[in-house]
Structure formats: structure tokens, C-alpha cells
Image 1 (cartoon, one colour):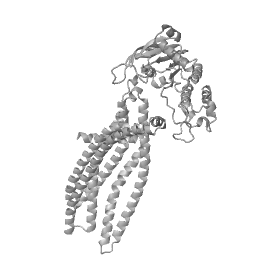
Image 2 (cartoon, helix red, strand yellow):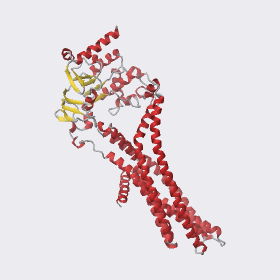
Image 3 (cartoon, one colour):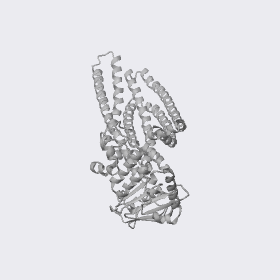
Image 4 (cartoon, rainbow, N blue to C red):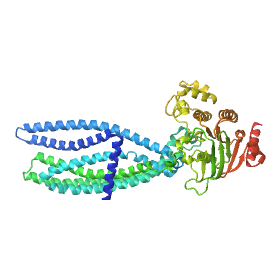
Length: 592
């Protein structure tokens, strides 16, 4: 009983959501419910009248009129059904898009550290598959209502004709439902198993189709390697799908067997009445057709329940994902001014979820407006993690970060992001126009400002000569007249985007890794000029470029082991000084 209460609750919830989001779609669903219930009933009566007319030896004017009337009604219903189905499909697609956007909004509004976890990736995949569950439940409710109307109509006829028909139909229909529900549950269990290997398949396929990754695949002759990885996971999913097909086939075969046995009993029952002279051949056709309609409706009624039960699990995945709590967002009430005075790290420790060791250990740091910081150290020392903590992509495991004396977790996240212009190490240029990539949500229509930014970075001369200028699409992936920029040009474009935003804090994570030393020197000169009145934090492995910063933080094993100006650290003759001297010697030897 509890199970059916939950199913009815899922139906009610879905109807409420549909009513709230798309009332016309709900109206079309209910229209379909009535039309779908009437069509088989009218059709059964039409066939009966035609048979009676064909075998009658008398003038059947009334039968002809009745048949023509029923044919007209059936035609109108069929046209109405086609009209309603067209509108249903249009609204269905629109609703799918709406729920996809809701999923994207939830993901983008989620804390970055939570969104990037493997566990959340699987939940997100399950939620994506459940995004259509509301509409599918709505469709099942339509089927449920239609089948209920069919059952009531047919039962009324059977009660007047021969109540024994109900005793034959109901047990077989109930048995059919039990079988169907069992296999629906087994199918859902198999689908749950497929999520993880399917994610890997999607990754391998996307990588093989990605023209950027395709360079490495070709150079290292890794095609067979990727195809083997893909095939292994595909085989795993194939076995799961094969099991689902077995369940589907078993469900259909058992269902057909039940229907055949049921029809055998029905033909015996109704045939007996025909030979006793109680009914004519047209009535037999009507009763048999109505029995089939009733049997299908009864079975369909519970099948709809089973489908709602199954889709209810998917809907739960979707709703659970949207309902995920994301830390203490209710605390994020403090506004953030367009400028800041100081950002302070107080004994900040950070450890990734599931990790035993801390990535950052007891970080104490004061960043003042206008300061220029360089963060250096070996790979894996925690440099990028420190930046992600500063930007609140991650939150401290221990300790706190203060902005002008306020815990930054109490600041409105969207406002806090406005403090930063960032060039990430793994920056992403979207398949939009050059202007849209640079302006994004700030003001992509301000072409004059975009031009000035591109001029500062010596990109305007090339872009100006393009047929569409800044309206040229980046990459040829979607538009044949797009442009594929070099690695260095792409880095400059990402810097242009950060410069265009004009935020008070600029963060540069390896912004010149694709440039040669001469181009790098020229670009850093421009960056320092651009950032003269701003706060800057830069991660770089090329220490020649960091020497002009006010402060240099040398990190090792998650700790700041050295801090100070370039001159002070060189005087200490510690690890920074040795690394700087090593790189300087390398450049000199290379030049010689």
C-alpha cells in the first residue's frame, strides 16, 4: 500500500510541476487522455455495426446511418489526436530543454570543489537521465487516465451483457502487471550499473573526436590504445544492455502467453452465447474487441503504475540533485564592494575530499590592494590550489580567509567573483566569436573597448584583417569560416578577456607557457603596464618573469617556505635563489 501511495504522490508532484511550468502542455495531456479512451470504444462499435450490416438480410438504413455516424466521429477523433500529439511533442521538447537548463544552473551554482568530484559527476549523470522524468510521468498519467476511462466504459457494457467476462479478464490482467513490474525493476537495476562505464565511454569517444586531442593520438600512434579502452568499456555496457534485452524479451513472451490463454477462455465464453442464440455475430465482435480493450487497459493501468514507479526513481535522482545543499549558502549575505583593502589567509589548511594528506598546510598570507605577487615552486607544491582557495572554488578545511575583516564565506559568491579577472592554466576559449569570447557577459557589444584591449596585446592587426573581424568564430569546429589560433595567440586572447573585465585583482596561472622567451618578455612588460594600478597574483615556472613582482612566495609540499622580494630571497640564498640561478645558467648556455 505504501508503494502505491508513493506512486500517486509522484503523479501528483509531476502534475503540479507541469501546471507550474507549462499549463498548455498539461491541457494537451488531458485532451489526449479523453481522445485515446474514446477511439478504441468508437472503433469497436463501428466494426460491430459494419458486420451486422454485412450479414443482415433486411434493409439496414439505421445500421448504415449508425455506421456513418461512428465513422465520422472516429475521423474527427483521429484528426484531433494528430493535432494534440503535434502540440504535445512540441511542448515536450521545450520542457526537456527547460529541465536541462535547470540542471546546468544547479551545476554552475554549485561550489566548484563539489562539482568536480567523481561522485558528483555520477550523480549529475543520473540526474541528467532523470531530467525528462517529469514529462514521462505526465505521459504515464495520461495513459493511466485513458485506461481508467476505457475500463469503466467496458466494465459497464460487460455488467449489462455477462459479468462473467470480468472474472476471466481481471486475473490475467493482474498477472500481466505483476510480470511487467518485476521486469521493469530489473531493468532499472541494470541501468544503475551502466552509469559509470558509460561515463568512461563518453570520455573516450569525445577524446577521439576532439581534433585538439587528435594531435597527441596521431603522434603517439595511440589510436589502437584508445579504441581498446573504448571497446573494453563498451563491452561492459553491452553486457548490461544484453541483460536488459533478455528481461525485455522475457517480459514480452510471458505477456503474449498470458494474452493468448486469456483469449482462449474469452472465445469459449462468448462463443457459447452465440451458439445459444443470445447474441449475433456483430455483437460477438463488439464484445471481443471490448474485452481486448478492457484487458489492455487493465494491464496498461498497472503498467502505467509500474512506469511511474520506475520514472519516479529517475525523478528522485533529478530532484535530489537539484535539492543538494551546497554548504552554508544562507550565510552568504554580505555585499562585496567593487574594491577591497586586504585579503588575509589565517592558518589555512586544505585537504581534498577522500585524501589523507593536506595539500596546503598552515598558510598565512596578507594581500593588500595594489600588491604584485609571484607564486613559484615545483610541480605539485600547491600553487594552483592556493589560487583556487583565494577565488573560493575551494573552501578551507581549517582556518579562514578574510576580506576586509569579513570571512569570505559570508560574502555573496557572485559579487565576490567580480573581484577577479583570471587567466587559468587550462583556460577555455569557447566556440563563439572573438568579441563574445572577450566580452562574455560584461559587454560583448562594446567593440571599441575590445579593439583597444586587442591592440594592447598586439592581436588587433591580425584580427582586423579577418573577413568578419572580431565577429569571426574561434575554431572551425562549428563554422567553416572560423579561425584556429596558435597556442600563444590563444593565451593572449585569454589575457585580453581578463583585461576586458577590468576587475581589481588579476590572477595569471602560467599565462605565457606557449610563448618563446622573447615574446614572453614583451608580453610581461605589457601585463605589468596594464596591471600598474591593480592587484596581481601570478603563477609561473619561469622565474625571470617573476623578479619584478613586489613579493615572491616559494612553495614546497603545500607550505610557503620562503617569502619576500626577489632581492631579499636571492640574499637568503635558499631554494628560490638556487632555482633562479639554475634557470639563468640554462638560458645563458642556450644562448651560447
